[in-house]
Image (cartoon, rainbow, N blue to C red; front, side, top):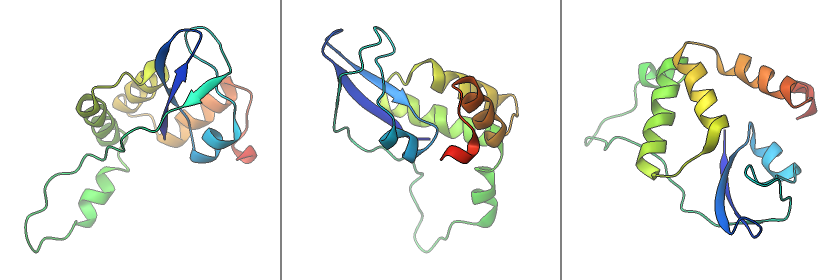
Length: 124
């Protein structure tokens, strides 16, 4: 789930918006979460990927990949990335992370969030 940063000229501040997919981020015209302004300027932000330093001659094991399929592990990685970036990703990010921590599946969360905004999984 990508997070994009924008500048809101009405609020005169940077805002971060969480999207459910990359296609949603490019197809939608986002609004400022604080004032509703739809004329946001997209900011180029530093890409941040949190990884543990690899030891020489080691390969990622299948069990590590499967950890990201576990909702609680995914929430932990999301929260770790958020802390490392020191950015506020907003209430949607916190909601998704909280639901993952409780064990809800990412697919279930995505369906419910899309339903809340009137979209279906088939639209993207």
